[in-house]
Each structure stands twice: as C-alpha cells, then as structure tokens.
Length: 198
Image (cartoon, rainbow, N blue to C red):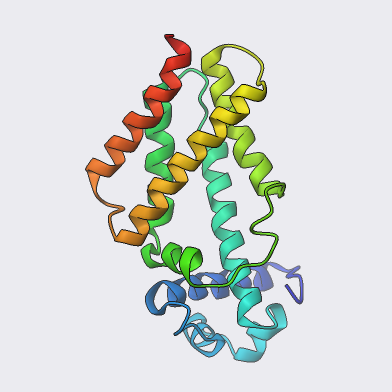
C-alpha cells in the first residue's frame, strides 16, 4: 500500500476500492481486471485509487489479504471448546463456504490467474501461523492435551482438506452444493473423532 488510510473516510474509501476490485476480479478475471474499472465501480477517481495502490498487482495483494483477514476473523469467532467435533466442523465449514460465496469467481482468479507476491506463499507468514495454530488448538481440545507436534501435523491435514475442497468447489461453481458441504464435514469430523474415541 502506497499510503496508509488514517481517517475513517480514507479507510472507508480503501474498503470500497477493495470490494470493487474483488467484484471486478470475480466477474471479469485477471485479463479483464483494470484499475479504471475498479475506480469506476468504486465511484472514485483513478488518481484516488493510485493514492493507495500504485498498480493493479498491489491492489490484488490487498484483495487477497482482505480475504485472508476475513477467514481469520471467522475462525476467531468459532471455538471448538464445548462442541462435539461434528458441530465444530459444521460451523467452520459453513462459515468458510459463506465467506467464499460472496464473490464466487474471485477465488478461482486468485488461485489460478492473478500473480501473487512471495508473502502470500510464505509458509511462515503471520496468517499461516495463526491459521494452523487455530486447527492445532482444536485438535488438542479433542485430544484433551496441550498441542504437540502431532497435533500440528493433524492441523495441517485438516486445514488443507477444508481449503482444498472449498477452493475447488469455488473453481467448479459448486459452493452451494449441500452434498459437498456434508461430505467435507463428515470427512474432517471423523478424522477429529478418531482422537476422541480411538
């Protein structure tokens, strides 16, 4: 980001630009994505957009980061403690599908078309650490112990299963298919259940 928004109005402008960018990417793909189209949809001048994002690559990074932040925000609200594995998994899967349904075409573009910065692929990024720790904590709750190395491996498998199924469903236009949702919930909850009832 070229300029950090400090005032509420500036932050609202940045949020409007990001949402407009997500909409344009979702509808038109990377080939049809331009800063002019985003500015038009956002109702701001291209100059205003460039105050915050010097080019469309930096804007795509911001759109991607916004999505990752949304995912973390969802996860922070859904706790495993006190829930049966099936209910916990159902809650997280339903919330993640909902988050990916806002702009269904966006995720295909972000995954398959739009270039990404090295930060996005960094396995030691803040996002990746918090994301995997969330699942490791859930695993340790169902194993009734402090998280250990094995729980982190289980967390990696669970997060990859959830991400993979949801992202591929988004690619295929199948996010609203109840069978995919129920099978994903069944898969992950059975995996979690193994530690509860070995």
